Length: 160
Image (cartoon, rainbow, N blue to C red; front, side, top):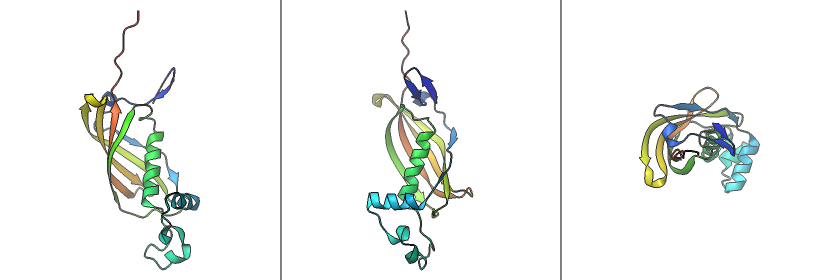
């Protein structure tokens, strides 16, 4: 991330390279996170919210909502700064949920740029990236691909 006179700026489409990999910091999932997300979304499934119920469930303990983990992943990616004021649109997402995330797990995200497609009429280009959400043991809990529309680098005008 760079800083200009009017604030931070991420990468423009032209500055992103196929094969480029970025990894976020970690985020530990708490009981409060699960309760707040369940309340906000209305998803009060007992596998997320009822400690007694899940003792008899195959999971054995409360698990974080898959969409909660995915939402945190998007936030963690944004905190890297590469999208700051340069992402124009979140265009698509396909994810597979592989392992449960439980209270106390710490997740981080690894993003690898797979391809780029210039979209001048949209003001930039689309990057497709592999996204892996990893737990504290380095195991993949969710994986998939996302597409982002990134702004083109502004044309610099000569100064007099």
